[in-house]
Length: 274
Image 1 (cartoon, rainbow, N blue to C red):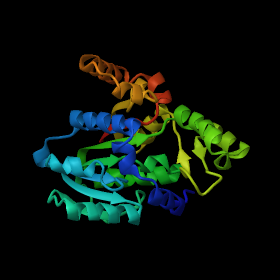
Image 2: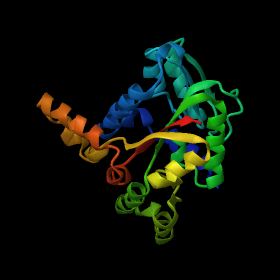
Image 3: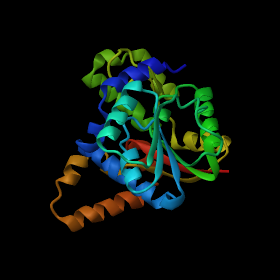
Image 4: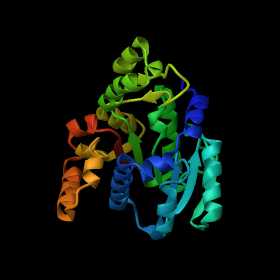
């Protein structure tokens, strides 16, 4: 089973805001995710969003500024406390609540309460199939009929190969046993209490099947950073604005290619409640 304490301890230290705002790989992920949200989100005037696993509100705050009603939730008490501090400094009446919540138990929320659920994080960590099913059953319950879910995940090849890179940088976190396990099952259990803890890396097909059996219709599955994965510094160093924009268009155009989804970092499933 997933050790939620280990996951919390990792995010108590890891700075998600900095990753998405001050690092070019995170910057591209944020900008491409916002493009995806802009493409599929319903009209502002009618939409209520649950940002589940939303950390300190990296997406909550910009979406609230656009007029969406947002409920922020995260497993980490530390991150929710930081979100509340941010909200005190930058009040926004569209941010309705900031709650400490485990993604497999959304009992704090009512049936059919939300138009949209953002699931940007929990599926990185839920090791067991029953935990993932519990999470999606709860997401299904709190969504209105026809409601949308946006779920990020780390594809099998990207995640597994990254564990080898982790071994090069942090050999104390990877041994022969957990390396074989991640390639056999997509599950990673860190040998150390430092670094990313307990990851789950499904193929895009497995992710589609998971949502389908939990009564969601697929709208799209795509790579978030696309072929710019691990080329982000070069991308943002481009001085020719037209060339930059053309490359962004090509990233979007090819983002649903299965080969790119499986090998280019974080990916996203978009679906609707049946």
